[in-house]
Image 1 (tube, rainbow, N blue to C red):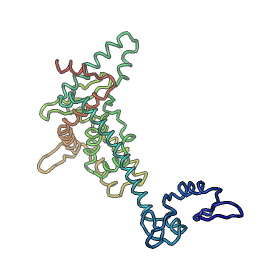
Image 2: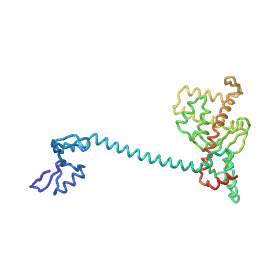
Image 3: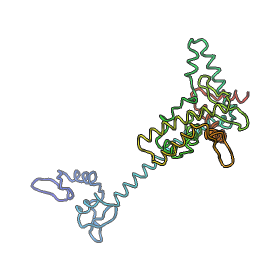
Image 4: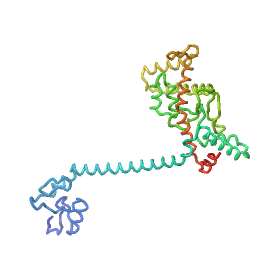
Length: 326
C-alpha cells in the first residue's frame, strides 16, 4: 500500500481501488480479499504464502490471483459442502427412523396378532360405523365410502394406472410367470391398499377377501376367489402388455412369450403337465401356483393389514386393549 499525495488517497495493492484512510483500506482487505495477514511477508524469504496450500509468491497481487483458483481451497469448499449435504441427509434419515419407530410403537400390539384377531378389529369398527349411521337415510352409502383402512376390493385396484414402468417391465419380463409376478407385487408387496385376499390353509376350501361394503374380510370359496384373482390380474397383464408394446418398451421374444401365456390362459381344453403332475389346463396350473404364493405370504399380508389399521386416524390404544381382553 502507498500514498498518492496529490490526491490524498490510499490505493489497495491488490485491486488498485483507492481509499481516503488507512482504516478503510484495512477493512476493505479483510472483507473483500479475505486476508487477515495480507500485509505479512515471511521473515525468512520475504514471500507471501497462500493461506490454503502454502505456495510462495513474490507479491501480494500474485498470491491473491492464485488464491481465487487455489485447488486446495476449492477442494476444502467442496468437502465442506459434501459434509453439509451428508449432515442434511443424516438428519432426514434420522427423522425417518424416528417416524418408523413411532409407527412400530403404535402397532406393536397388532403386529403379532393372528388374521382373525385383526379382522375382528375391522368387524368391530364396521359395526360401530353402522350404528353411528343408523339415523342417516344414506347410511349404506356412508358405510361404503367410509373405507378408513384404504383397502380396495378385488377388481377395483386398477393396477395398470398404479404400477410404475419398472414394475410393469418386471411383470412382463417374467413372461410365462407374469401372473405370479403381478400377484406378488400387488397383493404381497409394499402397496398395502391391495392386501385384499388371504389364504390361511391349503387343505380346506375356504379363503378370505376384503369386502368394501362391509369394511372387513369375509369367508369365500377358495376356488372362486382364485378365479376372481386370475381374471382381474390377467386383464391387468393384457393392459400392461398393450401399453408397453405400443411404447416399444419390450423385446420381440417377450412379446411372443406373453402372447403365448395369454393364449394358454384362454385355452381350457388342453391338459397341462408340470413334471409328473397333470392339470386340467394351464389356468388350473397357474391357480395352484397363486394359491401357494398367497399361502406363503399370509404372515406378511396379515402384518401389513395390522400396520394399515394402526396408521388409521381413529385407532386408539384403549380400543386395542379392549380387543386384547376379548
